[in-house]
Amino acid sequence: MDLHQVVKSKLCLGCGICTASGEGIEMGFSKKHGMNIPQLDSHKTYPLGDNLCPAIGYDIVHEGIELYGSEGSYSMELGNILSSYAAYAINSDVIKGASSGGVMSQLLLFVLEKGIADKVACTKFIYTENGPRTNTILTSKLSDILDCQGSKYCPVDISSFLVDLREFNGKVAFIGTPCQVAGLRKLQKVVPELKEKVVLTIANFCGGFKSYKSIQKLSKRHGVRFDQIEYLRFRGGGQPGSLLVYDSFGKRYEAPYPNYTGYTGYSKILRCHLCVDATGELADIACGDAWIDRYIEHKKQWSIVVGRSKFAREVIEQMCKERVIYCEALDQSEIIKSQWTNIKSKKIRQAARFALYEKLGYEIPKFDGGYSKYVTSMLFELRVFCSHKFKELLEELGLYKTLRIILKKRY
Ligand SMILES: Cc1cc2nc3c(=O)[nH]c(=O)nc-3n(C[C@H](O)[C@H](O)[C@H](O)COP(=O)(O)OP(=O)(O)OC[C@H]3O[C@@H](n4cnc5c(N)ncnc54)[C@H](O)[C@@H]3O)c2cc1C
Image 1 (cartoon, rainbow, N blue to C red):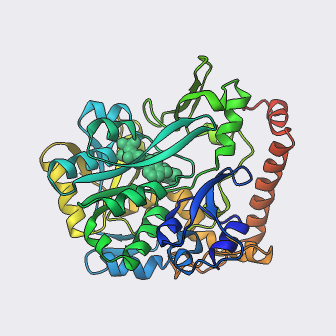
Image 2 (image 1 turned 135 degrees about the horizontal axis):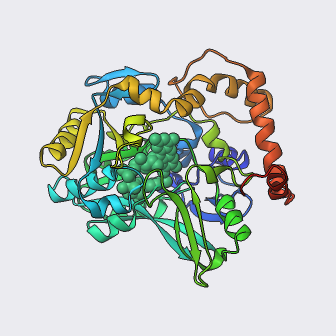
């Protein structure tokens, strides 16, 4: 598969890694895709861009072993792990804007303070006349790191960050989705000095994201002018928190997470349905929500944190020792249980989904494993597929809201 096929078959993640190929690729917003995609010349080929693209797939097992295999233990569900914890940041300013325990942001602050990294990469919303978009910045400022907090359940184009990274002469810590980290790993293979430069990678656990069409639809439906949005968050305001969006006219919409994910007929983007990376297997550290009763019921907001290398373990343990985060050891079996819906979808049901989608004529990303090869029920996957397509069709026809009204459900 090449970049042309990735875009044509709607497998593009919109991450912008391909722009680092030096082949003149630029990203541009596509209304059809509802996100930034590479603007390709149909007469040209992009062999280096093809090589960098994580949407095409990656050697999740082999690369994981190469990076961390000698240090931790491997499981299909979680990848290579050396240490695992439930944790939260002690600093109340960090907790205020966090999606869960604020550990991801606290990690950035810690590596800056200790001189482990000179700058860190994180992602914030910017508000344009075309609606909210993301911007991944290279910074060493506390205010930027706090400004970037919160999960962005939407496509994130990191192409401008990749330019900053190339031009910056110093050590960098990077936060991103599992696929962004996988793309960065591909880039490190092509540009070996990036191995030294990017000293720490941190990924979120990932159940996927939707295109901008979903947030645009929700805004419109609730009278919030998309082109006048002044503030958007997908998570925040406690745990599990809420979506909050408002425009410059004072129109405001708030809905609880994760319920609002069903309030439009739009599903996750195609490539997220065809992903086998639930926990950022190629990142040194990965963080997720602690969907475990004793942490959900606790008065603090907790995260799950896994360290895949000795260095990652040292960083996390030092943070605990210095009381910037509070940590408890967490067994891998509990992590798997807490992430089971996502793990089941990406690791257990994926072979059946791949087989079905292939039969339906879809391009399939290539992984060297990392999911069970046992084909569960293709009929079940077909039912799920039809349900997604039906909801999407209703949404496109403007009938999804009506259906939910009839069913007495929120929209
Ligand atoms: C698309 C997506 C899907 C997720 N799916 C799951 C899931 O299935 N299960 C689960 O347990 N957890 C999932 N998470 C992780 C969860 O939402 C929290 O990010 C995690 O619990 C860590 O929260 P925190 O309070 O430590 O981070 P915060 O202090 O809120 O910091 C989050 C950091 O991540 C960066 N960031 C957020 N979104 C993106 C993005 N899309 N691309 C690049 N950087 C980003 C922010 O800029 C910030 O630096 C997902 C996150 C995302 C972005």
